Amino acid sequence: MSACTDACDRAYDPGCADTCRAMSSKVRRALCWAACAEEYATCLAACAAEAVGEGIEDLARGMADALSRAGRWLADHPEVVIGTIVVIGVVTFIVLTGGAGAPVLVPLAAA
Image (cartoon, rainbow, N blue to C red; front, side, top):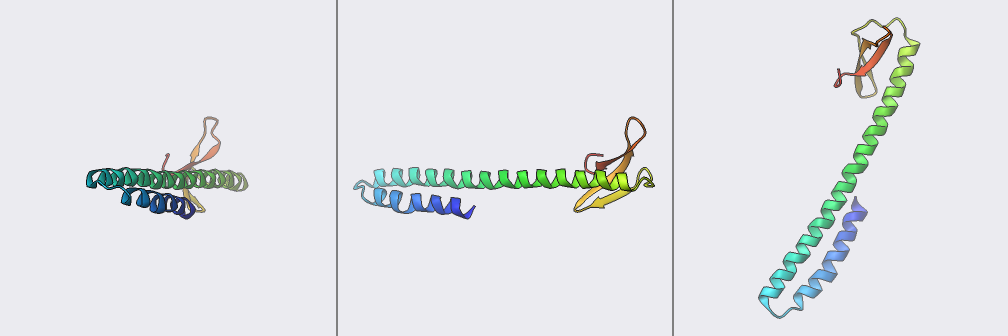
């Protein structure tokens, strides 16, 4: 995110500042600063949205990995009792039964 916000800073600082300072009318200068501030805020918001999107992708990959490991763990431990709570990594699962009676690990938040 730092590179993104740095790009916003570089675009805002010299370009807008110089343009707005050069205006002779106070009203035009004020409108110029307002427009620049809006562009800067939009740029920063886009950087934040990009960072959030990357965080969500990382979280989804982590959850998929946890579910994969949970499935392997359940296959290796057939003695697990239904209703048991299992923690794998930072994800908590509960053992339930599937439609055919086979044990299934379900993330606790979804149960």
